[in-house]
Length: 285
Image (cartoon, rainbow, N blue to C red; front, side, top):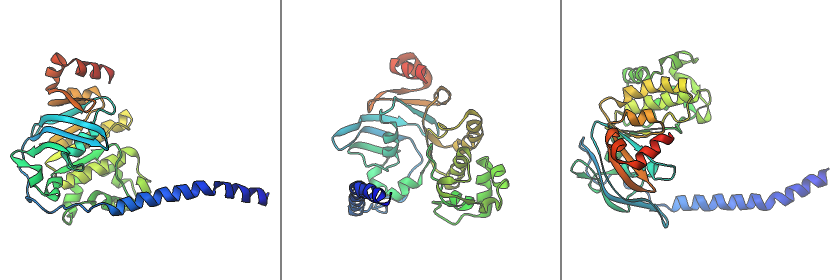
């Protein structure tokens, strides 16, 4: 039996070495990456429409966003729709400058993205996605994660209340100082989403990005999370990757993507009337 186990171990050594070598190459490529310059450029961004003009982006030789020109109206809810692989998430990452566009112009009002520091630009954005980043630590530290300044108890409590998180905090031993496990262990998916909403409320962003924020939730939990989202959306420019017809119907403006290109944009009523691809998409949701 011992010999048999030893042979099995020897036979699996090549796969372990291959895995370790792959990990080493990945680490080497990460360490070789040039550090971002987040400070150069203007230190403020106006509150205005977001304009993309002829914006292009791709991975290696694959074009993902192909000469897209569209205006995201200030203070409105814009739904971005399209089939899987149409470039929805990539477009969002270009708008908040997590990815650098390879061509075209990106502006907020008259401010060109290239003239504004990454720090100032990104400070105006908050993201709530279906894959919430909740870490090992207290509920308090998770909500305050990324805050530019020390958070007052009053501001923290307000964020908890508006995010519909008060009952969750009250039900945990230690309240805000309850220790969450790795990857949010100890909190349900809906509770983690409400932590993310409270975090975004503390940031008080000009632009809120919702990347299918309730896609993985059941109907009851989605309704509870939506209460917090409704508070967060008030008075902001909202860009929502929509996964259901209700989100599209309630939007002020719709951007329709098809294979990285802009199929059309306008109000839901306009899209229903003139865009056959929009009608096809909404019938499938």
